[in-house]
Length: 427
Image 1 (tube, rainbow, N blue to C red):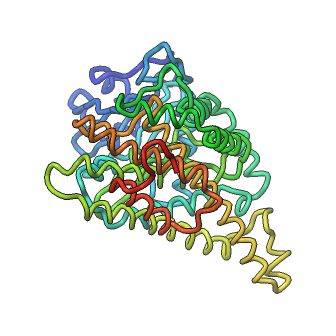
Image 2 (image 1 turned 60 degrees about the vertical axis):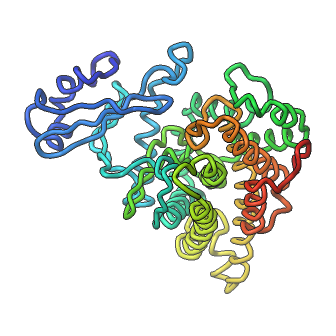
Image 3 (image 1 turned 180 degrees about the vertical axis):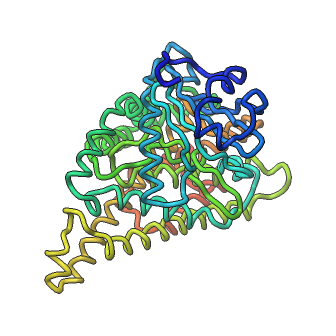
């Protein structure tokens, strides 16, 4: 199969084409013609199949040579599966047990055979359903701290990190998607944008907001120029699968070397959007408890991230940055702690900026979140989205003057209750 020209898999052709791959056959078991195959991909880019047999099951993920959400009018390179595979192997090494196990990779066919996570569901769907999962804040805070620290010059040997930087630098087309769809398109009338019509006046106000447009481009500048560490690149609640006992991060095909704060901001933005969407999912009763839970998740995720990052700084700072010869080996532990404080403060400020623009692109751009899209009452959806848009604008533009998540979450509560900035005034 590896030597063949690329062919997209189907439910019918998958057993024949993968039955001879030892790693797949051994995991699934039984004769390939007896395998049960389901196509379950509901994402924007790829084919995803669940394959079940006599002794086990697998997920097969295959890239397509175009954006599935749009069609073949928007081509994409198959090589993105190469970056996903390499990102998964590095994430497993740096945060063991946090990602699916990989059993087979076929570069020519742009496919990865990986662990079938069951009975896991997508985190976004769980939050829409009102599930209060006990582990996600700790698990995701640890995942981000471990992968971001251990993939940087704080920990890696310089030659190894630079070689890795060169490898992932070729993920140009997926970075281009982020650079345009996240940082640019939401702030003008780009052809593929869409939004809830009732938002028209607010959208016009946002797109005329010079301060916001400047800050969005400053974040784009940081995204493009600050190659600090290997980031997941698309870390949102749709890229996490969960049970009450387990949390796994999936889909790192957007991985590249970028700012540490990018993954943190993307993830927290999606928790804030889940918070603002809760009023649209109250058909079964009040979601006040769920809203409080989500704000607590945001605060705990950041706290766990800071604590684990700080612990790794003190025990695994073996790279070229903030070298121990200048601090601990000079009996200057306080100097090392001062430097740590500066690094974390930079992540804090940048995280808020990235979170703000992520909220905007998910409401005003091409790819929207089910958190809002599943709200059938369009007027109510617009109300939820408007509060989120105003919140996103505030944290992006004013991030250097925000001191705590408590302060930010208090603003989120006021906006959610309709007691924030009045119409016609963004902050």
